[in-house]
Length: 249
Image 1 (cartoon, rainbow, N blue to C red):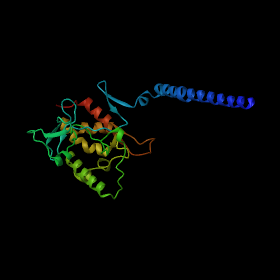
Image 2 (spheres, rainbow, N blue to C red; image 1 turned 90 degrees about the horizontal axis):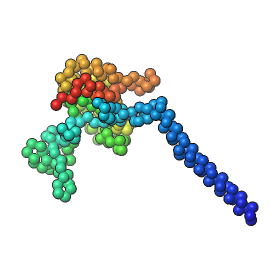
Image 3 (tube, one colour; image 1 turned 120 degrees about the vertical axis):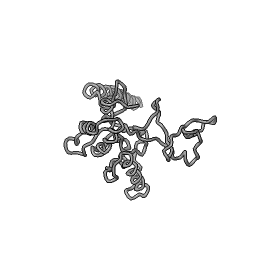
Image 4 (cartoon, rainbow, N blue to C red; image 1 turned 135 degrees about the vertical axis):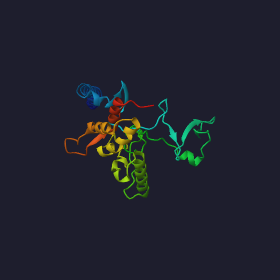
């Protein structure tokens, strides 16, 4: 009996020692070692591939973001479906109430359902996002290629992109009307960037050739020379644009 107890105690202690050793190795030594190596060899990637402008973090080059019209405080401006600007505020009960900026008339429930932001013509725009560029809502719509809702969305987006950039619908590339699988793709095709260049140049009073040259300078080649397509990181392109032409008021 004493031998059995001693044997079981030894096995238990051996198991506890193994747990402690593995906890220290896998839970402390390995993570700290990998973090240290990453900070030494790849500091930019280890910190999230942050993009900075005038000493401030403006986002990550790995995550797409919107470039919508904002007010003087940097808050996104809201618009109704008919293009009129809208203000949002809370009533005494804590409910969000929308009113038109020109006159203060309240929106109907149907009008309020169509309220949204609007892209800023002074910036290059990213691909569409099913999660509104929210990293916590990463994902696709999961619509099939023959889904009527998706087909209509693409038709609507194509018309909007063409009108916004002042080009025929035939010039609108695929990535301008389709979201990526994550909805957070930070890059667009070179073709889509060039489609937007004249609109950006006009909004900033720049020479179109200067803006097109800036696009060419920010084109990233295929991964290891042959994977994927050439692409332009929207955040990095807009940061480069801001450096040569600060946002006009």
